[in-house]
Length: 339
Ligand code: ZN
Image 1: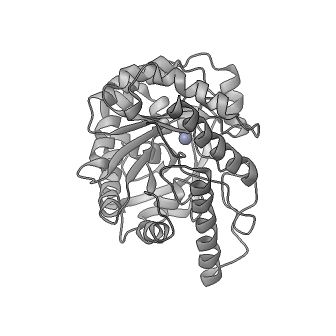
Image 2: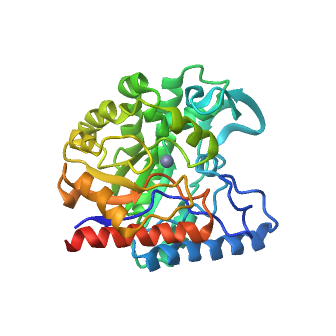
Image 3: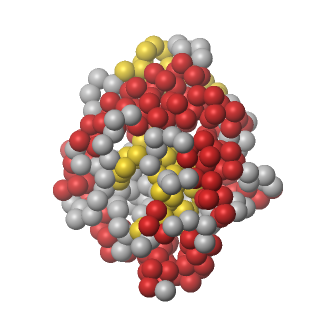
């Protein structure tokens, strides 16, 4: 039986963020009022996933202003009051972006997402997944003035992430997912040290250990790149590497890319979370389209290792669209499971 879940994020209610954006605009409420607003948003996000019929839920990343900053802001050694232009993602989507500055050793003085996980578990009767930014992606996004070497910084970051991931697993997270969009960009570095850093982050984590590898959010700069890109061979290089790793589950995007679904055969015996929902458009898939996309994947692997998922986070979409896409996802899975 194929199971279902989203990658991670959902759009926030208007009381937490301006609609349509990836970043939560600093909100009107603050302090205890903000905490209450976030609790309400999480409750609704979890409810929407359960009502849609998904098997595993997330908190929709409702408490985070961004999937990377939501974790990194809990660390020391990074100056968020200043930034430098960084050639993030190899300049694929934008020439450069502002990156907060790494000024000293990166440390985690206390758990970052633990309280949020406990609060999510308390309002969910389904298993809960937590997402963390992967070490390579964090390194690629910050302006490093301390380590001077991407690999060295990534291993240090992996140790910090590992402490967090172990605690989240002990607290009951069913899946810990590391988001590594950079695995679709720096293919040589993935081979040289990216997989090692990822395994270090996941080492000893007693839950399903997952990695999410995508072509980015469904936002205009990414969609523009997708429109003229012709090389979709990245997973052909990374999946065989991950097949021999300690990672249990690999999340890839298939709906809105030119990736051949047959590539899943290269993932060995790993679980695959296949993106069968396009997160770059407000057009809602029919269950039949979802089922067709899933069947194209299922032809190349055993369905007991297959999850149906979204291509990436749903945060840039309107709430009603995101909810309709989740219902289409679950309905499409049901069509395939019943056939
Ligand atoms: Zn993604």
